[in-house]
Image (cartoon, rainbow, N blue to C red):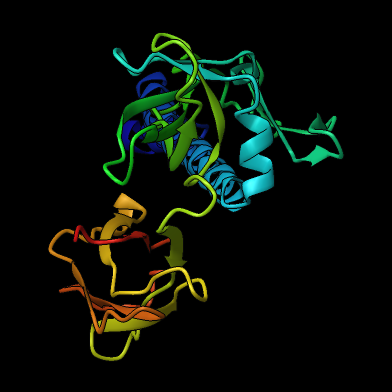
Length: 278
């Protein structure tokens, strides 16, 4: 009779210990799921921030390559030829182009203190940095248009955007405040520059691209220098690039990488060609 009584009591429900154990298991599982969801949300936010920065970089490259945009953006800027420091009131924002007379458009690519394209990326500073003599003539310089981001509120720190550019100055101005007259090289100079994207064959881990030089710019084959541009997350360490078949009208860029795959859309080569010394 006692055994039957115990069975009847047992069938009435769970004991307090069983309920507590079950509650603990459910709590652990719930916390694990919440942690996974939180991490996924953070990763999605980080990817979104990176994609926004890459899209802005691509837009800046396209805009800066145009001499009209670059000339307007650098209008009113000056450089100290000794310290290589560039000062300009325009470095508070980068407009999405200019109207006639270098009037900036209302839409902005980036503005200091403002978020980028509705993302969490806040622009901390815009500056012309890493300035040095271009080595292709007196009064010509090369540097980088840099857009720095604030780390506040970001999932991960984002590397600054760095766009190579070159410019020339008015040598009649004082050395500590030489006016920047325009981007690129002075009119009539024997130099040329550009950016080639997507130099990739894909099938045998190599690619090449023939680049045409401006007609009549060079009377002898120029010297050509290269600088790589790629998304470092694509792991292209070990890639090799070189130039050959240089003539007065064109040259060829060659690219070889140890990595297989077709994810090379953000890769490119900056190039500059200039007249060799006599």
